[in-house]
Image 1 (spheres, one colour):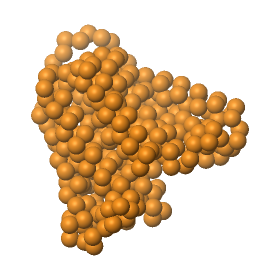
Image 2: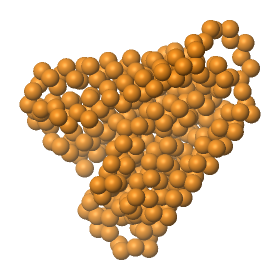
Image 3: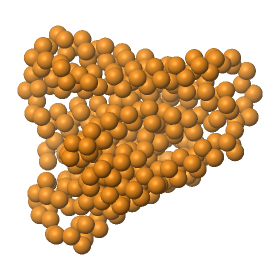
Length: 334
């Protein structure tokens, strides 16, 4: 969207960077307000809204990048994009939210949705691992060698899994409407929908502007394309989840904050990779297979934090953020 930005115009890039951040923050603000109002109006638990509407809205950048890559035949980008985004969501978004304010975890997330996210991650590792075990033995010293493949059949299985998950979530929402005696006056439905659509649009456009301008500024300041990709672009596509979850947490919508992260990760794994690999089978490089295995490890550690109490504590949040710093350092050195 912002490909037209001239690389060497620092003032224009700085303006787009600042405007992008404002759009992200304000967009997340009205997006959360609209979503929370809809949840109250229809007596739907906030966590369900986070797992569906909010998760899909904040995952729009990953969907656009991965589907575009699949259509152009460069869909190996899809795996690195999704894996990097999911790692960021789990240990940075949840970690930062917990650092700001201990993050309560809904029982539905602990018993149902997080395990589904873990199963989806395991399924992806298994799909790529089949090729690694039975296919030609890759040179593991070559990070770009093919170590696995997510086939079209695998992609269809992932998409079927996503449809089943969404059907189950919607049915759950219908059966478990909240009985809150909240007398807070709600806005008209058309206004809530406008807030959700406008907020999502601001999040996507603001995130794209931040990524494009930051990438241009980084190149001017001498950063390599690889370093920019591992840091600015990877973080940039997850900015919607980060900002939206922080805003939701600050507003007391804790179910929406953690539901956004878990829902986005499920959306990324099942729908985005499902659609991308259905278009063209996705090769998984040695480096991507390592990152995918790391995602599984990070998911297990985060789930342990979720299960050890009723909330993710500040100490656990700090450990999660430190894990991401260590991972980014390794990725840069690699």
